[in-house]
Image (cartoon, rainbow, N blue to C red):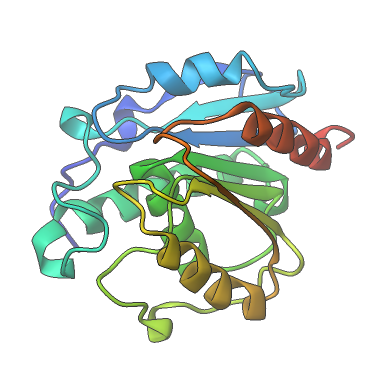
Length: 215
């Protein structure tokens, strides 16, 4: 296990108190952010009042130092620590009675990559997964890293076709991994878009959030 570079203890919270929450949404920020952009995004989402909002916070505002398609060793031990941090958050939610099927997981850029990597390594039923400008991590897809069954979980993958961080082929490769693992994939490639979250993606996420509306 890697050195605890990222700390579960600095995770920030919003929405319903965990003791009262029936569901949760994890919103994982990208490189260079401290969670503020995710908090702003939360204001644009139709998050049910019974939902806890979880903001994982990276040490030094970065989950791992290099690009997500660099050799694994180039991003260690930070990447392992980031994955473990996400595991700790989900365990904490489970301990408060929130099952994985009631946890919606959203991330942008580095956060999107991290979330998709973690959930594909631990595939099971989630409330939904929104991958905003991200894909599975590593120079090549190592299918042996991934196991489980998404059991019909909807995974939305949205990204530009000219994103300078995320090559389009990795979006397709990621879909080719998660779809046979039982995920229902909605992949949208936006021509000429910058490295941003657009209005169509926000609308899609709001549609997906109905999965936890009536819990």
